[in-house]
Amino acid sequence: MASNFSPQVGHQQDRSSYEPLETCYVRMILEADKIPWQHNLLASGAHWVLLAGYLVVPGTFTSLQASATLHNSLSDNEAGEVILNRIQNPPLLALACVFFVVGLMLIGWLYHEYRSNYIWLINRIFMWVMKPTLLNSSAGLLTTMISLYTGHGGDWSIMALLTVIASGLSVASSSILLIIYKFIKLEKVKRQHDQLQSARDHFSHC
Image 1 (cartoon, one colour):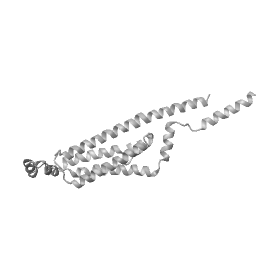
Image 2 (cartoon, one colour):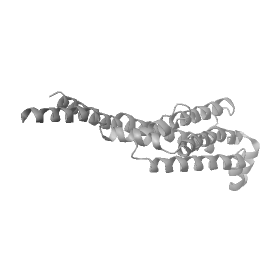
Image 3 (cartoon, one colour):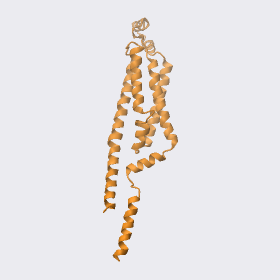
Image 4 (cartoon, rainbow, N blue to C red):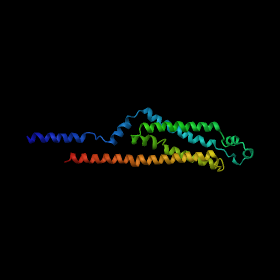
């Protein structure tokens, strides 16, 4: 009777060793592969739109702070005219704001939609090879500084200051999110997967 039982147990152990291990890490990999291509394309477009906003904003800077026109405006207390003179191209500024808002809204929606899939967020939102949020915001900050000191003589206008602050906050937030998801949350899931895998391998060899 014992001889009829042991082969069955051995067969069950061999079969269990080939069954896929259902862990959070495996689930994220499978779900990332099944995400619609339209959403991947949307993530790409959102990064391009956000980058366009970063590149357009420096074109709105002006170096009229020391000009005679601005001094006359200040002396006449014409606050509205002063504000308009601080912006070199108001329509371009409006276009940049539209790019920023649309890009951030798309990225925010995708983040909320796939917030439980760390692998997709890291690969498509935080650290994509071609258009990562971190590199885009860093490029925007660098472009702003170059335009400020080469094209406008280091004149820190209101627009320049706001752009540097926005770009710096974007770089900081992207870096923090990348560190949290890649080096903390995803690593925790991978450790759990490795522990379960080791436990199953140990059990199958007993």
